[in-house]
Image 1 (cartoon, one colour):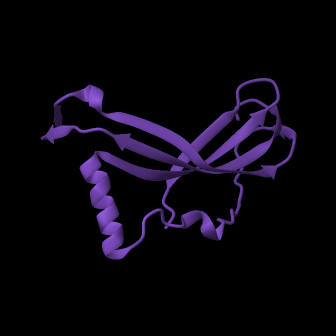
Image 2 (image 1 turned 30 degrees about the vertical axis):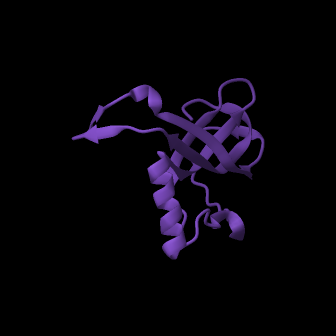
Length: 127
């Protein structure tokens, strides 16, 4: 912070976004050919966890924080099985024009009492 600011606290958030794409599109060299209106994308937050790492006070300058987030053991439960059955399910999704992926993010945000929160996020990989 360049100027002192009163904030309710500093928080860390871990969240997952499922992106589902349905419809058909043909791509040639990165150029899409075909009807664009037949491709539909939906995003939904599938997991959201917030952890406070510092309390209400006046924040100024830069400060480093260490934190740990315990990831629930069932968080990474696969939506499709491994092996031949999993491959058949994936092939069915491709043939029907549907696919999905999950992107994970960690964000930090300063909850400013009278103004816009200051935040930053990074995409992470969870296996």
